[in-house]
Image 1 (tube, rainbow, N blue to C red):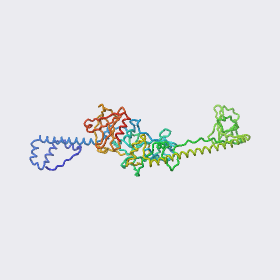
Image 2 (cartoon, rainbow, N blue to C red; image 1 turned 180 degrees about the vertical axis):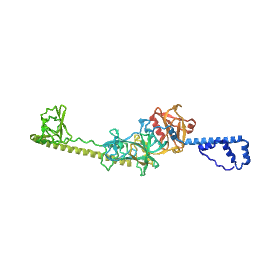
Image 3 (cartoon, rainbow, N blue to C red; image 1 turned 60 degrees about the horizontal axis):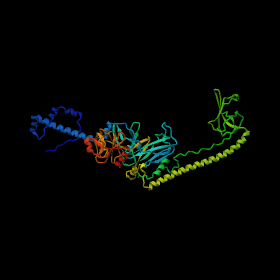
Length: 561
C-alpha cells in the first residue's frame, strides 16, 4: 500500500471554492480525467459502467468530510472561552460590590496637602506624595489636612468582594485580565472628594505576588466603563522586606497619617493654634482736625477708653462741617478693614454717609490712658510669650511621638515575625511574608481610582490546560433550578476571575483545581463543590449548595486556600 498524504484541519472552503464545486458534472470530469496510475483501464471502466458506485463513493467521501469538518469546528469551539460568549452578553463594566456589607475596607491616612509624605500600607506598599499635589473639583488648589483612602486586591476573592470587573475590551474584542496586583486610592477634604493635579502625579510602589515582568498598567475609567492602558509595569528588583508590625502600632500609624519620614520634622496631624491675646492699642492725642464723640458700647469695643473722641481721617474721608448741624436718625460704629481705623456710619432718611476715623484722646485723658496702656501691654507680652512656648512644646511633643512610633515600627519590622490579625488581611500578609516572588511594581498615578497591573488573556491562554463546557443551568441540593446573575470560576495559581452566565460557555482548567460559584438573583452564593466536567458535558447542569453571603464567602476562602 502506497503512502498517502492526508490534510487535517484544512479549514472551511472559501466562497470561490464553493462556487467551483457546485457543478457536480465538472467535479466528476476532474475525477475521471485524473485516474490513478496503478488502476489502469479497469478503474476507468468502473466509473464509466456504473455511476451508482461513483455516487456512493462520493457520498461517503462527502459524509466523512462533513463529519470531520463538524468535529474540527467543535474542537475549535471548545477552545473558545467565556470571553467569546461575553461578547454576546456584553454588559457595561462598573465597580459594584455584590455584597456591600462584605466589601474590602479602606485604610485611611490623614496627611497635610502642603507637605511631602511617604505612606506605607498594611501590606507594605509605599505611596509617595509630593507637596501641593491635590486640587478641588473646581480646579482650586487644596491646602491643609486631607484624608487618603486606600485598599489593595491581591487575590480573586478580594477582587470579587469589591465587584471589580476583569474584562477588557480592545477593538470590540473582550479579554479577561490576569492581575499581578491592584489598588484603589481616593482623597477627601472635609468629607468631600478631591482630585489630583495632573502635572503632579503620585507614585505607588505596589506589593505584587508575581515577579513576572510581562504585565502592563491600567486605570479603570468609571465614566466609560472600561480599562484604559496607562503604561508598562516597572518592577523593583531589590529584595522585599516583609512587614511585621502588630496591629496596635499600625493602627496608631494610620491615625497619625503615614509612616513618618525621619529626616523631616513635619507634623502630619495639624495642631489647632492656641488663641492669641488681644493686643492693646493707644489712642492718639486729639489733633486740630474734625472730630466728634460717639456713644459706643464698652463691651463691644473693650479696646477703647470711655473718653475716646473720633477724629476724621481726612486722607480717606471727605468731611463737611454741615454734618455737625444735622440731626442724624442713626449713628453707628464698626471696625474698619484698615489698621487701627473705625468706620462711622451716619444715616438721615435715605441718605447715608460713611467716614473713616481713628480714636483719639484729649491731653488730660491721654496721661491716664498712657499708664493703662503700658500695664496692658506688659500683660499682653507675658501672655503671648507663654502661648508661643506652649504651642512650641505641643509641636515638639507631636514630632517626637511620631518619630518614636516610626522608629518602633522599623525595629519591629526587623525582629518580630508576626502578622496582622484577620481584620488586617492576614492571608495576603502571610503570602507576602512567605512568597519568594514578591516584588514592588511602580505605578504612576495621575488619576485617582482603581489601578491594576494586568495582562489580557484570550482563548486557550486564559488558564493552563483550558477547556470549555456549556452551562445550561445550576441546580441546588433539591434539584431545583437556581436563577443566577453571573457565575465565576477561578483556577488555582491564576489570579483572575472567569465569568459565565446561564445558557453560556464556562472556561475551566483540566489540570488544576477550579473553584466555581455564582451570585443568585436573591443575593446568595451558589457554590459548585463537586465539579465533574464529564457530567456537565452530558447534562449541561451544575450541582451546587446555596449559602448566605457570610458563610458562602467563608466557604470560598476555604476552597481557595
